[in-house]
Length: 199
Length: 199
DNA sequence: CCGGTTTCGTAACAGCGTCGCGTTTACGGT
DNA sequence: ACCGTAAACGCGACGCTGTTACGAAACCGG
Image (cartoon, rainbow over all chains, first blue to last red):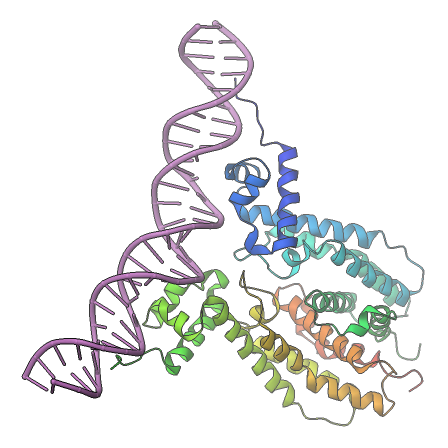
């Protein structure tokens, strides 16, 4: 007896796509529910019936961003050389950030005012670096990396890549980084600093 | 003939103080002009006559944050040991961020929606890392650090400290970092990775 | 063909940043 | 002593935001 529903999965994806597009092209200020709904050919009610509100919509973008990042990190194949693997992971991190510049600000720079990721999303975000953690743990077990809690080394590598990308997206990275593989050089320097002394 | 002005320097400072306080205690969402003006005993007009608008007020907070950071970095005394100096600068960076958590989100995580630092503020932000750049340049000149453009090494060290602090403030740093000087250990690892091979 | 039921769009509400307008205030000239 | 003038400030309106209550719309069974 109901009227045919139009707030379906297809509309949900259209809203998410358009929201990411608005974020990337015009910034967080342009992500308004009225405009978003109009662009998707619906009304603001759709956001509430499909997500629950603007916060949850942004949370969905957040989750999507970390899923893509996680997929890229898991796709990095191991070479057996720990430093080389860490460099590859760092490059994959940067590639993911540049590929979806639209989602990166939501994931890491609290681009939307009132938004805080919920518990499940935060756990997903932390577990995204698991491939990195495994690589580090393997290196520590084999005595290649320093005898330090693997979580510390993994967090350091993550922080480094995150900081570099963050500076790059804000245009605060010197132009030399664009050329001559300075990115790779920096990642190698950071990783090799954790090599066990005398190796 | 005018009426006595109350939109003076003292009110300007009061507004800045209260704005930083609101940011730190209740987040960017709580920084509204009406409430800010009421707390400072004035009206929203004061923000426009003293700053020009909310964006410029946030820009003033941004500038203030980088001035404090710059002061802390310039206060770090050199030891002659490049790695030790870089570690000290990294620790000073963290100390500054923790000392004024209220300003850090404005400086680095675009906490306020429409805000983008103006050109002068952006130049001030970049020049804040000058002490770091000088230390690196000295190390490269003396042949202690790798023969890489100093801007690259300096940006890398900055990115690392920035990434670590960013993760820490978001609660994504493993608990080991709080203890046992793991922070210093990580900074040392990152810096020593740039030592000239065979040194 | 009409009643019931589910679903969606509209419009109202409180809040925001912004700015024009009217009031307030003190001084200088009469 | 008083009033006109000119500057400075606060009030309130405007258009916008996220959110939600409510009425209209659309289908199916009787």
